[in-house]
Length: 230
Image (cartoon, rainbow, N blue to C red; front, top):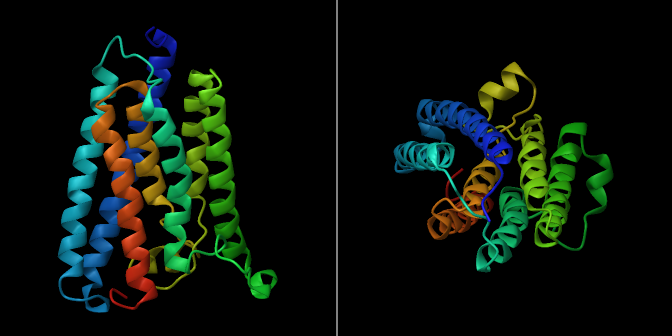
């Protein structure tokens, strides 16, 4: 059974909007990293910039394919049973840059003394994890269209400025806004590829891209934890 025409129109529009947003933010981040390349190992800035260009291109191709496709059918096989746990896991992976807090036990007593931005940052991690699991349960329970549209809309909340770490990624945002919206940008890529997989656009490839997003952001965070990157 194919998706309804109204659902296809809405999900295609939201996916294109999400792609435009992540593209603008990602390209600006790449330029900022290139501009502050002395803060990183010599190999990192050009590698990061090339990775961004590749990620923007591939995600754009998937979003445009979704928009142009007709008669797509919901995936009810292994895909949703892999995608939804990966989407929840992506929030754990993103917090690698902060030592996997707040998912790391025991919880530090200093959480209560954090500033408002860092409290929001941690709340987005936990909220994203729980909300994704809830939408996944909704999808597997048969409310597929509502789950996908709801998750797409909810995903934009991670763009609320929430990170005050002073590094080459965030400097412009800290000086201009006071906090950066970039930390959970990888989760939007995971969402974009995840939605494409669920609606039937190159599902195996897009599932692999969600897994790659989880792995990539974990490696980036571990690179920060070990001071190998910044």
